[in-house]
Structures are given as C-alpha cells and as structure tokens.
Length: 374
Ligand code: 3EB
Image 1: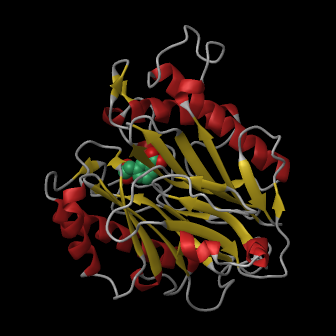
Image 2: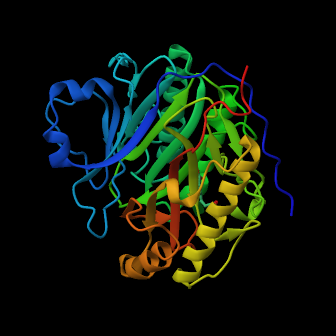
C-alpha cells in the first residue's frame, strides 16, 4: 500500500507555553474567577453556543448534539503557564475570533450559508446549494489564513470543520465533496501546501440549518505530520471519493511543546482508502481504534521512544445513529483504561457508509525535546 512517508520536522525553539485540553461543564466554567480566563485560549460548546457570562476568550460551538451523559460539556483550551500573556485578536478583522500567545493561537469562525448574498454567489441561490457552500468555505479559509499571516503564527496544526447536511446532494454532488473543492482552492490560492505539511483535521455534518463552524489551532513552530501506514494519505485518495481530495494529515505532533502535543485527526474504519465493515458498527469501532493505535506507533517512531499511548489520550467520538451509542461505547471502552475522557456527539460522518469517527488529543510521556534539540 502506498502511504506518504511522515515528514521530518524542523527543530524549533522550545515553547514555554504548555497547551491543555479539558472537558468542563457550563457550571464549572461559570464558577471560575475572572483571573481563570487569563489563560483560556478558547471554549467550544457542542449542541449550541454556550451562554457564558464574562468570557474573555473566543466561544464557539460545533453545533453537533451531545450523546450519553455529555450534556452541558465544553471543550476548553488553555495555556498552563500563568506567566504567559494572551492577546485577543482585533474583533474588526473579519469574522475570525482568536486569542493567542507567542507560539500558539486558537481561532474560530462561524458562517451562515444563507448569509452568502447575491454579490458572493452570483444568481443569489437558495440556502444549502453548492454555490453558497463553496463561497462560504473559501471565505472562511481565506480569513483564517489572513489571521495566521497577520499574527505570524503560520502553522495550522489542527482544524475542526462542521458543515450542515454533509452527506446531502447539492447540484449533482455531495456537499462534503463541494467543501473539499473549496478547501483545496483556498489552500492553493494562499500558496499553502496541499499535501505533506497540511493540518490534522476532521469534517463532520451538523443538522440542517446550522451554520458552517470551523475552529483551529496554529503555532509558530513547524509541527511534525504523521501519516498512518495502514491508510492511504487522504490527500492522495482516488477520485471515487470526490474530484478534489480532502486536505488533512492523519495526525501531528508538536515535538518542542509540553502539554497537549499530539493531535489525531478524525479517524474511521478505513484501510487503504476503502471503508471496511460497512453496517457493523462494533467492528468499525475496533478498526478505528486499530488505526489510532497504528498512528501512535508511527508517532513514537518519528519522535523516537515510547512517548504516546492509548492510555494518555482524550477522545471525541462522532456517532452517526444515536442508537449505536452503546455498541460503540462498549467496543471502545473495552480497549481503554477506565476513566479515559470520552465525549460522544451525534454527527454525520463524511462517507455515507461510515457509522463512527473518533478523534483524539494527547500528551507525551518522558522528557521533552528528545530528538529535536537544536
Ligand atoms: C477519512 O479518513 C474520514 O475532510 O478534513 C477524517 C478526518 C475525515 C478529516 C476532512 C475527513 C477529514 O477520510 C473522514
């Protein structure tokens, strides 16, 4: 099987800021003192935008309903070192909300397709058609790249993409495929690589009527991209999955950073480029875990040493059919240590035959800067 070799990373400066991810309830967040916000980079709600009073960081939402006991939970990205000063992006700069320090940036953008007017989409089409989706996606990425240039935090390391009705057909093709075309166009127009050094990502479907919601992390240092030896690189998928292949790496690591420094993209029951175990959600879940395990081995090979493991990951699981929740949960938890943080969300996965998709973030064990000293 051909799989693009994992790219060697350039050695960079050691970061003082350790990134930290937590899943906190609305109540926990509301109970924090004002000073707590000094170190918050961004907050992501799931089903809807969380109403958080006094938020001093971007607050966004994926618009994907939660499942299980995950009501009122938010994803909170923080910088652990209290001495690090964070800045907010100028609210006047387009639609991207962002907050950053010297080496890390969190940003989010929400765009309604129905707000794409006559001017942006000639002919003034109906909401949900391909023209509005293409324009909205391209504009979102254009604005994101503008922020990265302005802040000089140019390395997009992880992008979360949520678009309504991802599997629905519009103008003769699936909306996910239109999204892929627009994303590729935006990367190309900004002079960015469309394979190799491309961010880890996920792309999920939200309910009809939701806005397109994208959030992301960017860094000053170059990440190391990790590909999965069991899978064809997504940017090399054959045309049967869309004329324009998706742009994402299977995972990336920030070798010089402490804290959360491994980002595993949305991962599914795909071997090579094919969906396997169609219709069998438990088998899809096990295959997905096997893929994540293969990525961890590859990450360990690239950074040198046994530094990443399933036991040190936090998971977000996207479930297509709510009734599959129990089967997915038992297949997943049987392979993980008890008390592993897992958030379950209902979302449509970007291939009609995929029933589950799992993403993860993790910390590395052992000394930092191994194999990446200047
Ligand atoms: C896959 O492996 C499943 O389009 O950004 C996973 C992660 C998937 C990211 C994206 C899509 C994306 O092809 C789907």
